[in-house]
Image (cartoon, rainbow, N blue to C red; front, top):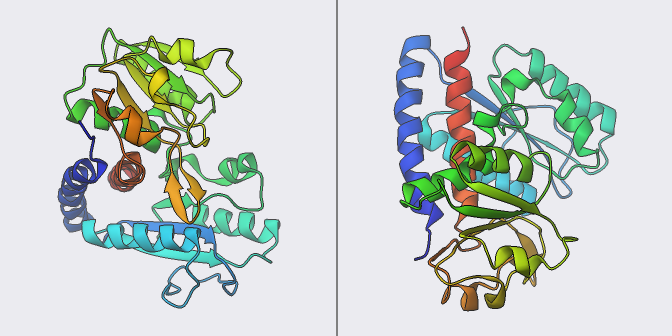
Length: 282
């Protein structure tokens, strides 16, 4: 079974749209999401309403265009801010602080990578406006996207052995916590794990986010296992996951594609977070 993230994302978006509509009517305005990223060759901009059409087609700009379009579809007001590659670290961090203080900005998403350590970016964002979900487990967008994909496809989590190939603070660890809350037995691995195939070969659910194309092959997966691929790496102008999709799909019971798997659902979770943040604001 191919786990189509686009279908799940559409369902979540419909739920978010309904919630945003009710909140907009109640509060007299739509929620506003600030989108901060660095474009390829774009002029420095401090304007949140700067149009995107004239920027070059870099990945960051494509992401911002996509999320801005999705925002509009569910009734969220997107306010993009694209900085040039020459922008100083202090200016970007100071601008995030401006967004923190701006009463008209309800939520913030900073598209990484930026030429600033991730820890500095995350520490600068007001946790109350964090739409990506760095600070609150229930809003961790990518981990909760994985849970949504499993549950909305009727894949049992409780009592199953899940192997996660990622140990990062904002992905692998919160995902492990969510799976434990769902009564899974969880093993956290990484690219330096000795005999990784031994661990994955025992798993009912494999979730990989290592950013290593071809890391998981057919021989590492037991028959009928569920494989969720979060890895995304640019290869020859195309996105590649961590899993050898064509061979593994013949052995796995269910598998997510790249692209079109976790990505759309994670974006839907970000929009859901915006609605939740807006609803919690007095």
